[in-house]
Image (tube, rainbow, N blue to C red; front, side, top):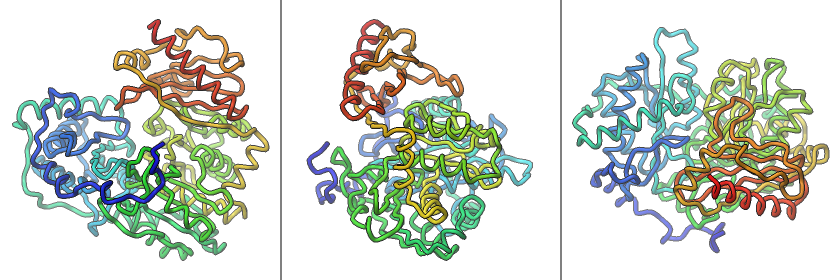
Length: 540
């Protein structure tokens, strides 16, 4: 934890916007250098122009690769294009438009020149594709999500509306790097013309009544505070309050590409993470001014929930409350609709699902795994421990296939309006029934070779039989829900578990751990986890 975590940003913490924009155009990547290649993580390609990791050639080549990919897949409908409030999102969107138009792709951008949250783009793709058109739509959202102000991000969402799978992103990244290596000779660009528009905000906001009980919220008169954290949801929250007659205040309507109004995150960086107490410190000063106070990151795919009686909720705690509430109130969902969670989310969700007599569907890290189930209604709710989730409409049909932080924030108000209890109160009641887990993620050093070995590690390679004094009951390297590789391992006992995964950007591996036996027991779990993983890696 940095000494300045949770304190206001100072002038020295702010990125030089002019230098950032100039570097986007001036610096040319060399893809023989790994750090300068196009690399798609779970949420697209990300990097800073200052490090020659997110520059004009990256975006032009990636967009050209997307044009070729969609043509090869027979995707010939419109492409929805939106961007968040990061400084690099503007020039990257312009570059993408120049390539898309030159490749004769029908492009739809926001009708009012507004920023476009990730969930609004997913909603637009699905709305078009479910309307019976003979062609299929897809989309690009230009965002690095909650990343610092110096970063840019570029994400492709195919016709299913959610994050592209590895097959698609691997092909797109490889083709983009080939184009860059060939000095961009295969990239077509022209001045944008004939670009169509789409009302992302109005369409999304008007449809919310089909998934959230906005009438109950309005009738209750609860006071809602929404902080967009300088992100793309800023005008959406104002529109939601006006459209549905809610007592809703946009706590901070400011948009500043340096994010100078933020408090520093745990590591001393500016990061728009609504689930981080350090990043949300300034928001938390308004805790007692509202009945429900929420935050979103820059592209509004993450949520943070603040209550007067509980402060900022741990994301795992809120997911458990949301699941318990939704599966008890959504009578239009399929009776066999499952509870979807990633394997590094809290096990209190397992206990909640069992009490609801609902199937638990555990998948690896990455929201893309929930997409098929949300589309066909076999998964009612999909959530990640990193404060990202979505769920079905009242009638059991798909809403979005990407994370929706606006939706989850509104759900907190519905829960209070219809039950008279805050999500924090509901969580305390859940712990009285199921126990109170302690959860933490820590990092441990690992060489590139060790990270590779961990990513391929088989659970059977772990020889330990006990974890923190309890008998190990499962050693997993594949997800129970869909048998997909975890890219790491998870070890479980009756009252605790840990999961270990290599970092995609640093020479560390991540240890997620949880115990229902208290903080001291959690420390033992973490210590044993490191010994177990290190031992397995030494033998690999």
